[in-house]
Structure formats: structure tokens, C-alpha cells
Image (cartoon, rainbow over the protein chains, first blue to last red):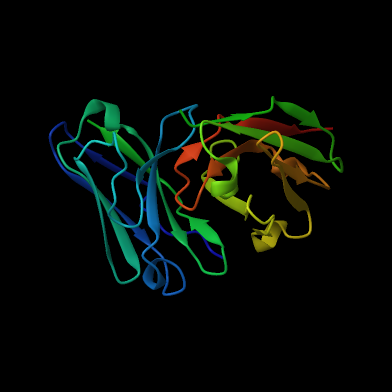
Length: 110
Length: 115
């Protein structure tokens, strides 16, 4: 199972919007409504930001949103804040109780 | 509150085995799978496998299938991941995470493989 493809980095100024893509195949991202997104600050454990493509857990700011079209899922951060600077990973169900993570994207707040 | 507390850092020699524990609290242990994820230094997240606490059914990523064993102890609400035949490229932080959405994570356990 190959890792899902994410851009290595994205950046934006405070208040701007950024979108991170996560491209897989019809065997993972395109085949299921089970894509999740995680935020990881340096030296910390990942934190769930979006589950099931679009669901935002309690406590996650509503500036984080998820979507999917075909084999590509996306995470959008609207109104970028300094604390959003972190690494972001997507993860998809890949069938037969297997999962696959994305390659990771570093978000920089300029 | 939900917590997953992992065992401490380990240093192992190549060829040895390591067993990492993940003690759960704040929820019904039987109700959620436990996943294991690792992160090599400066690298991304890699899913290793998962175990159903309810029925002990486990499966792992193909690259780990012959080297990893996942178990649970429901009496202590603890999950375990054992990795055998360690190599230098197994040096990583190993995380446990709860459920199909990986909604809660342990703090991570650094495993260093070095001669």
C-alpha cells in the first residue's frame, strides 16, 4: 500500500485560507468515506482534526473543513492562525481493515 | 477523560525484540480498536496495524506482517505491540491510537535500535 500523496508544504498569511490535498486511488480515498486529517506540532502526538471526510470533532475550530472529490481529499484552513503552523497528515481506510497515511504537509504561517 | 499512556523509551540491539504497552483509561476498553502507528525521525506517520479489543482480531500492514504481534489485556485495559528482528530503520516513535478515526493518541514511545 503506497502512501497517499500530499504537497510537501503550503503557506499563507494570517487570515488567509490554505488547502491541503491528499491524493490516493479508488482502493483507498476514492473507495470509502473514511478520510481523516491530523495536526501534529513538533514533539507532540497527532491530533484528530477531521474524520469521515467532513466531520469535525468537538473542540476543533470551525475554520477547519474537509472535502473529497474522486480520489482526492482536501483539508481547508480558513482564516489561518499562527497556532495552525504544524504538520498535517491525511489518512484513509484502504479496505480489509487496513489504513494508509499521507506523506504529510508542513503548513507555515507567514 | 480518555487517556492512552504508553511505556517508556527503549534502546535495543539489532535482531532483538521490543514490546510497547498502551494503557487506556476514561472509556470502555472493549468498545474501540487500538491502532499502532510509527514515525521515524523527521519522517511521516506510518500505519502498522490494528487489533479489535472486543475479539482480539488483528491485522497489520504487509511490511510488518511477519514481525509484529498485537495483543490486549482486558483485565488491565492495556494493549501491547511487539516488534521482532529489529533493524536500525525501526528506530522511531511508536504511537497507539484509539478507534477507526484514531481519535485519541498515546504520547508515543521512542524505540532506538543501535549496536
